Length: 110
Image 1: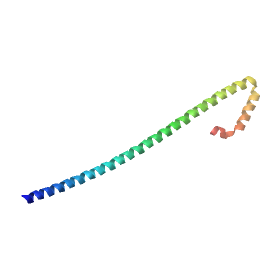
Image 2 (image 1 turned 60 degrees about the vertical axis):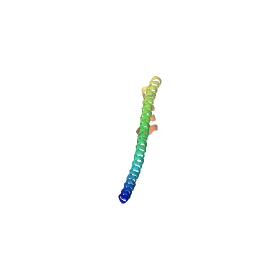
Image 3 (image 1 turned 30 degrees about the vertical axis):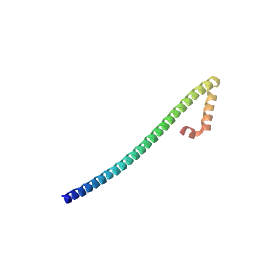
């Protein structure tokens, strides 16, 4: 009976040892998975922030371009009214041609 008890105790210790190894491996795997998930989440958050910043910058540029175009339109309208009020058609045509030559084609392409 003592031999059976000793054998039983030895097997029980072996089972406990195996169970502890399994738990230890499970903990290590869980920690690795948690670290990977956290790393993936941080990378995704960084991508989202970068994309949002790029979109905000693009929106800002579009808004500035719209304001610039509006200012050009208003300035052109005002200049046309001032010119129309102060000069005749011949002088006006000459001024427009000179201005366009001074500005050059590159001004209108940017």
